[in-house]
Length: 389
Image (tube, rainbow, N blue to C red; front, side, top):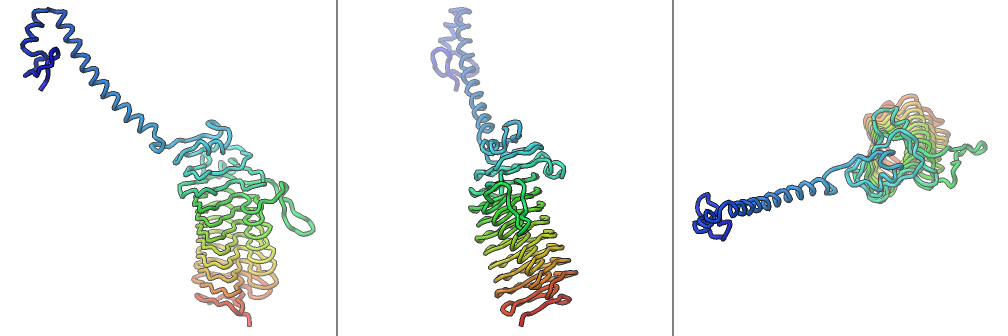
């Protein structure tokens, strides 16, 4: 029930004054009535103001709360360097890198953000948007537990030139010292970023000329990984320490290492599927891949024209039991020990299902060489296999 504007007593109906105060209003005249109207307006003003304040607080909370929306950060524009953009970014933000060459090494700092070119599916934009590291450390690092919502897309990522020793044939960087692990991209500490649609080239390291993956689960998808070199293992990618990456739909070409020209796997469980492994080289073992102490799935890949100086042009298995399904091995060269396509040794027990072998060559066993302590199961028809006595 409403109350009297003047004395506060309860009143009935639409009146703003009790009967006694109403008589006084009529007696006091227009001045008193004007004062009463002022009191009424003030009451409504307070009520309306409180309502507007409530609406403003709701709007401000929605608009400024850190996770309520995402930003697009332009480089250059908002910031002059990519690392400055990463430092300022919040979860869910996208950093758009305009075409140009950026001479810097970057760290994602554990953030769930997207870093990409302006048009990551346009080959011309990807080729002209370049991050070039200094060669003294990986160009890009994921080492703080980055999540699957961390994305690196549509960039060319590289480093300085590599030189070749004319006497030994080995490659070295013109920016010493050589990076120990991950010439271009380093992934560790349980990180799980999505790395897709990039050109990753001209990296060098002792292990993992292009990418090094340690105890992490990144998705490496639809990249071109070419012209990278490892002084020891994994010209393209080195995978180790229980890592479980998905390596899918990439092109590996013209990568080099002493062992595992394209990919080297040590005590890990990657999924390697639907990649093109073309003309990668190992000085000794495993031109395409080398698998040691592991049981990955290797399916739907094309191994074309890979070579190894010692054995296993397409791949080498040491103490491993992978599944090879629906792969194609063609024109691979296995070196003086043999195994144009695959060299299987040291108690390995792979399974082969629905693979094809054409035009491979080696001094012994055009397709597959199997040691006396290893075994081979699956679809083995129309394959040239040598079993060691």
